[in-house]
Length: 208
Ligand code: 1PZ
Image (tube, rainbow, N blue to C red):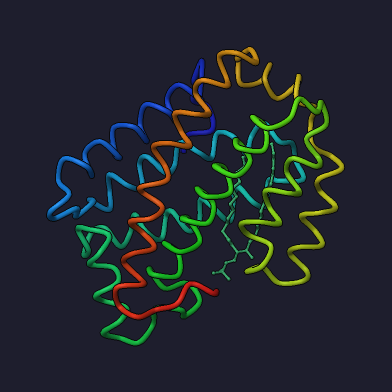
């Protein structure tokens, strides 16, 4: 989360970190207790992507980082992801604004949004990111955001860089980016599903 840090190829770091976490999960499939500090570290890599999107999405980055910081704070008392749910179910604060379980749900939505954006990018060669981003956002996040947030996000879509500019900022070519996006999609899915299972197994629906 250090603004000054220069990562030569953020997509490489992201693909590798998510692959490692998802491999660890597979190998420990009986317990599957992901460590919260470990999860926060991996999830924080994604915020590099926001910085390529321009000032209009600065608020999204701040939002995302704030949720992650809340979770990092939680990791002092909750070693694993499932401990978060235990605490909030006990206190009846799963959906309470700012609660650990709510922050985890929001971060999970962010990871899923990145996955959907990558899938959209792989499915088209469109040089504008507006449609790609709008479709992905509409699928993953829009249903759960307020009208005001949705309106701001859709307005921001007009300010996105072009596909070529984005690739340049990420220090990638179409070919190199394609490989890494596919790796992220494959590795993030089981992690996202695992997070969902933490709620569903406690009879908490995911319509929020
Ligand atoms: C290349 C394509 C670029 C596409 C850019 C799409 C950006 C979408 C930005 C979404 C911004 C959402 C901002 C605010 C959301 C808030 O309403 C919620 C409030 O949660 P609450 O406090 O009520 O529990 N906050 C969040 O959902 C956390 C932030 C999620 C942002 C994830 C974005 C990931 C985008 C990655 C971009 C590469």
